[in-house]
Image (cartoon, rainbow, N blue to C red; front, side):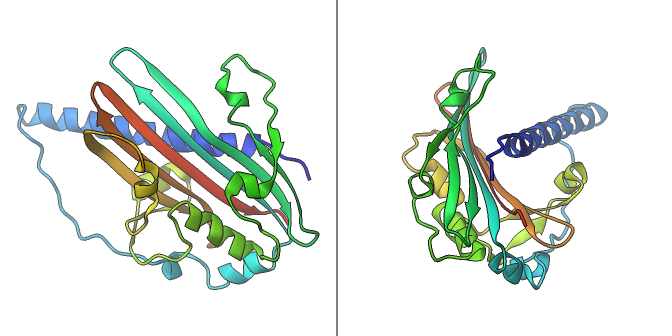
Length: 242
């Protein structure tokens, strides 16, 4: 097996682009409504939101699919974007990709965040590290479902949740089914140790494939500190390779 940084780069970029498109669309809509109403606040349409649990959106045999998997790829990305009126800077706090052979108990795990620190570096090569060093636990003796659950747990997420809502806007843009999760601890973990004046936005998503398997989990929180607007984001994907 060979690590490939392209899939996770594509996933993270798609996530960022979609977030930007939605933000611009909402801003444009608000400006349009404001003009039509003579500058008054636009009317807010309140609709009843349907609640979903993980058992509603994942296929019944999702657990069995992962338990039977032989090879998986784990991709975990965390980044921080700091913006002011005149500048913007993005730093990758973690950028990990691991190919795991669960049958033979072998893996190839690479850390790319140092390589991505140099914007002029066109030949991105990750530093090989141990899986346990990268993710904080050993997968030995675990099946893919247990590995997935542990990865999510370490980052304040879970394959089992009770309160989620369908995000139609994001689903339309991704061509899949995207759900906004309301009962998770990932935002608290992302903000742990951070100093801020105000949290301006926070969202946690799971993207579900057409066959009812989780494609990826993502989380994003934006907060203000002095003159800075800081956005922290997380992207986690576990793919069955066989």
